[in-house]
Image 1 (cartoon, rainbow, N blue to C red):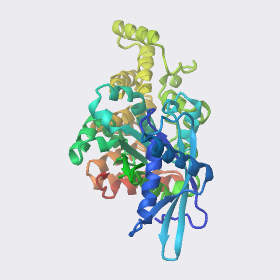
Image 2: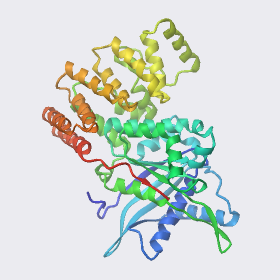
Image 3: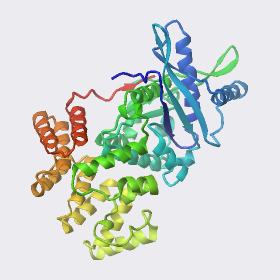
Image 4: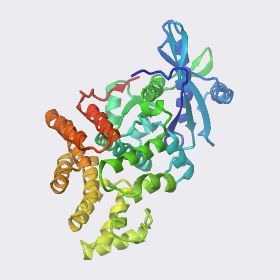
Length: 455
């Protein structure tokens, strides 16, 4: 597919996620300077970043001036800064602008799904960069615990994308790699520490790559300057992925894609798997979607869903009830919702299993269970759950597609292809048939291993 938007390059919104002081601003400035340095050399890169926005250029120059004057990195960002860049490419006839992109550089404490401003940014974005301090990850035992909420946030967004089969690239940016031992050993240490996150992204079939960024301050002719290595690669990859995404070419952001995907879900099955997905997402915010979407009380009760974030006392009360009565439905639901909200999916699985056992005719609960099995790596159990759904409803397109994807991932391509064809034949609309074809093509094609970019 062409990487070009023709004469009408789109403006893309990129989200940056990372704790305060991780180096998001330095990464952005380093990527810009590295990209331009490559372009100005004897062998120009195919693509590079340019900045025509006066305010953005002023902000970048301000960071560079601060480093030149002090020899230190700038202090953590105090307010959201809106940087606008262009991705350009050298052509035989001259320079072509592939796309513009707006980068939201925000304080780390704003990166919280309970923050309405951040929710709005998530919904308006088309891709994101996730920042993790590689040095702290390896050398500071408490660091992983300090970024636990951020990891759960990334997992939640990945799950959201997976459930709706959306196009939304994620770049994992490991900062301060210049402070680590060079070569594959340092990368192996990083990936070992982040294995739970990587497994979740793999299980959610996220379109992501890992990048290792080195941006030390060095002196050239006595003046401190940034010397970036491997930084621009992450941004070039994300923007290039977005340029070839059809949803982005049509100007869609995450909220629009979710609304259209949810509409398509209605065509796939006669009943909605999770009531009010798009409405809950857009009106209640992303938190409403991620937690209330799993809140099972709405399936059989006229009571409004309980607040997603239960107090510790309420949670302990429910645990006490389950100690006395392990099958108490209200407490099972409450504790289950809590574990899903905080991202402890493995603890949520046995609770949902008990709920499903008490409500065996609720197929939408079984779909939730199959999704949960997939996200926790229990793919055989997920497939068995789809088989159970198909026993009750042999023409259920969602279950057929879900089983087909799992068969394809297991290497049983002939069965997967047969199931996809069956689902396409049953689908009620041309739009649904087209969606199934897209999923089938993505599943059945030979998947290249996830690449990593080194310094």
